[in-house]
Image (cartoon, rainbow, N blue to C red; front, side, top):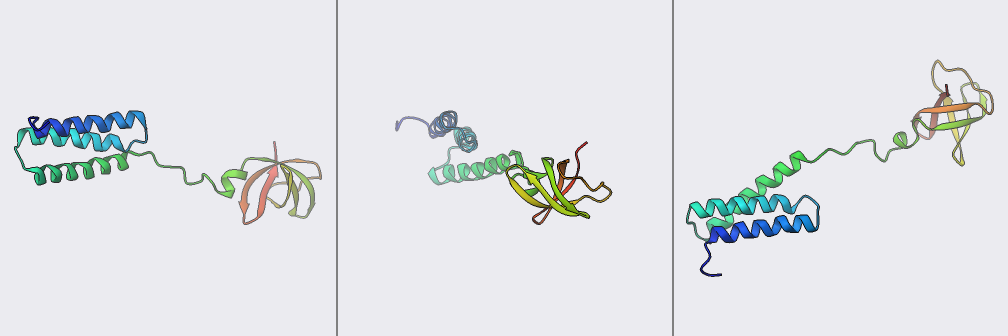
Length: 143
């Protein structure tokens, strides 16, 4: 291995990292593998010492990881919120006194308020959850 050019060693190391990415996907080793291959190509052209080679790899790895973070898809912000879990679901009216009342959603009873402009529902009416205000569901008749 001592006869191998350092550029080839970096390229092989980059290919090994890409192989690790294939075996254990997580889209992290890919960026380091790409940085290793690019570092190998640069070291092949410029005969630098070990410190220069490691510096080139470190800069390329940081740049590749920055690109990877930039390209990563953004997670939806409403994933685990009350509104995301309850909005749009169907509920059944239990009782209403004016705009305030109780509804059954799934196997639980909830405090509810009729949405502005919606008719006051009769007991047993099917409702749709429009939103959540604290622990109070905002509902309207399901059409």
